Length: 422
Image (cartoon, rainbow, N blue to C red; front, side, top):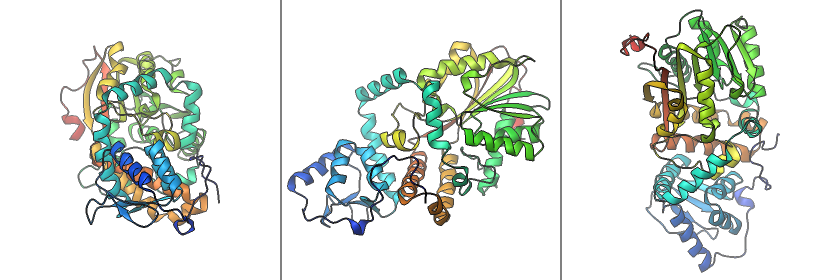
C-alpha cells in the first residue's frame, strides 16, 4: 500500500478504538471548545468529547463531531480548518450524521464568520498578491495535486478523464454525457470552425483539446505543467490518430507565444485560472493579447466566488496548494489592461455541485480499489475534499464562471446567442 502522497502528516491513521485516554476533559478544555466553536461561527452541530459526553448540544437530530483526544482539541484551537482536516484524516475526529450534512452547517457558519472579518481578509489578499504563484512554485503545486497517479483519477472520473465542471443540459443524466455536453458548449461559445487554430492553456488529461480536434476540425496547441497528464494526453492523441492536429506541451502558460504562422483564432482555459494566482492575472492577459488574432475569441472557465474569501488552510496546504477562486471583479484584471471585451458570463454553479455528487458517489463505489493504491488517511482526506467542494457549490459559497471574450474591434460574431442553443 502506498503512503499518503499529499497530506505530509507525521501521524499514521488512528482507528477510533485504538484511542485511549485516562484523563477526562477539564473545565478549561470545555471552555476552549466553546472558543473554537465561536471562531468557527458557532455552527449548528453537536460536539462530543473523548469522555463520551455530548457537550454543547444543538438539536437532537443535528450532525455532530466526536473529538477523540486532547491533541485533536488543541489542533482545533491553534489551526481550526487545518486541524480539523488533519485530525479527521487520521481518525482523531469522527463525524456522525453524514459528512455532507455536517459540512453544510459548518460552511454556512464559517462563511458568515469570514465575511465579518473584512480587515483580516484584506491582509490575506495582500499576502496572496505579494506571494504570487511564480513558475518555480507553480510546477510543484501542480505536481502535488495532479501527479498522484492517473490510476487513481481513472477510478472516479468519466472515461474521458475530465476533471472540471460538467454541463447537465436537458435530458443529460450521466456524467459522461454531461462532460461531453460541457466540451461541446465551450466549442459552440468559441464558434470554432474547421481549420482554425486554438491555444488550450492548462489542458488536463487532454480531453477538451482532443474533442475540439475530433468534432470541430481545429488544430490545437495545449499546455500543461503536469508530466503525468501530458504523457497520458500524448498517448491518447497517438492512439486516436489526432497527433497531427493536437500538440501537447509540458510547459507553463507564460511561455505561450505566436507560432510561425502568426496568431491564433481562439484561446481557451478550463480549470487553470484557479492555479494562476491574483498577482499573475496581468501576465495571463498579456499571453492572451500576444497570441489572439484580430477576430480571435477566448473563453476562461474557472471556479469563482462572489466576495473575496481566502482558500481554507487545509485545502491550500494538503490538497490544492496555490489555489484561489477569484471574484468576477478580480477576473477583469485579465481583460481590462488589454482592451479585451467580455461578451458573455455564465454561472454553472449548480452544475458543479451535481458533478461533485457524481464524483463522490463514484469515489465511494471504488473504495476497495482506492485502498489498493493509498492508505486510509488519504481516503478520508479525499472524501472530505470532494464532499466539502460539493457543499461549497450547492450552498453558494463557490461559483463556476465561464467568461467569453474577444478583441474590442471584432464585429464578426453573431449579435445574439441563438446559434449556441439551436
